[in-house]
Amino acid sequence: MSDTAAEACPVRQPRLFPLERTGCPLDPAPEYAELREKEPVPWVKLRFNGREAWLLTRYDDVRQMLKDPRFSSDMADPGYPLQFHFPMELLGKVKPALLHMDPPAHTAHRMMLMPELSVKRVEAMRPRTQEIVDGCVDAMLEHGGPVDLVSMLSMPVPSLAMCELVGVPVEYVDLFHRWVTLLVTQGSAEEHASANAEVEVLLYKLIAERQENPGDDLISSLLQRNEKEGELEPADISALVRAMIAAGHESTVNGISIGSLALLHHPEQADWLREHPEMSGQAVDELSRYSSISDHGTVRVALEDVEIGGQLIRKGEGVICSLSAANHDPAVFEEPNKLDLTRRESRRNVAFGFGRHQCAGQMLVRMQLEVVFTTLLRRIPTLRLDAELDELPFKAKALIDGLHELPVTW
Image (cartoon, rainbow, N blue to C red; front, side, top):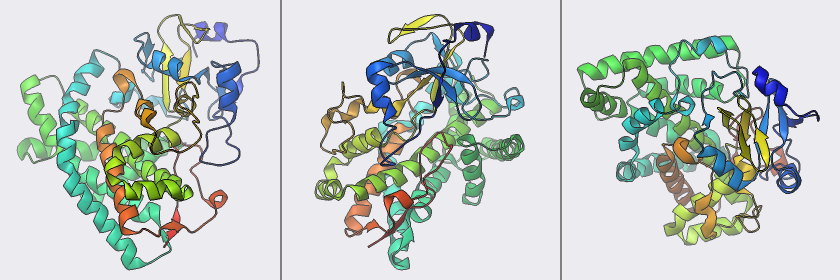
């Protein structure tokens, strides 16, 4: 943390963050409700590494900060509230991902990627996504219950879809999964360095191959577009592909797992979606709001003094957005802790972020979730949990909530 940030720290003892969940593991930490009411911008200390930052808990404050250009996404800034032990020596060796870039570089790189993730392009992928999901459900039915939904559905659907989209051979799925897992959990410096090196070598190899023999995939499209624009180097292409894989894969894996659990835990909601599959888009909005699997992974650092929620945030201080607290703000969402797939205001949720860094691949993630949930409920109408809720192995010390296993039967 910078000297300026240290001088501005409050005298009071910071709260430990992330907050501990008590009660139902699907509900946000109950302390968020108290904070929104009495102390909406508390000073917190990160459990993972001891860094300190401000925490935003109100919907309006989160949106205000995320659209404010006076906050930076540069993780190399001393005040940036990294929430795990990332090997800082890698920062100078690896091109920053889209998530950690500021304009104008962020704008140029995002514009290169967005045509591949347009509504039209994503909808063109729906039939193939349906084939992949049906294949996974076929395997589940052939195996017979009980099965682990994570290994048989949550993992293979985005893995196969992402490999085909990006142009990565299927045999490298395990490498990318290991690399993404390290990005959102506490791996050692050696593990980070090793996985990053393997991924970089593979992507440079694929980029060189696509330069010689273009295909119908993301890498080829980026290279062809860059021939006209001429703004990116191979390292930039690699960084964009890494960002796409990291964001799309982990969000979808955990979105399927936690979303499926939420539906099974609320069978009346599952029944409604089964009867109204045409409302799957609205249902995914509500499941995304309710679950908010990336609760505290959205962070920034102030480039100048800014006041938010009545709190002065000094230049150089870090800020963490609780997307879960924002998505459960009763000022915006009536009965926010209730899962209600008929809720129309769910489209206003910030589960995929807001502002210039709003998830570039959110349309792809949403489409995949729509196909998974409607297919699962239609083809296995008697699907149910095969374990008690408090027995399920939730992921701990991770930036994105998820499950290691989800036992189900029918």
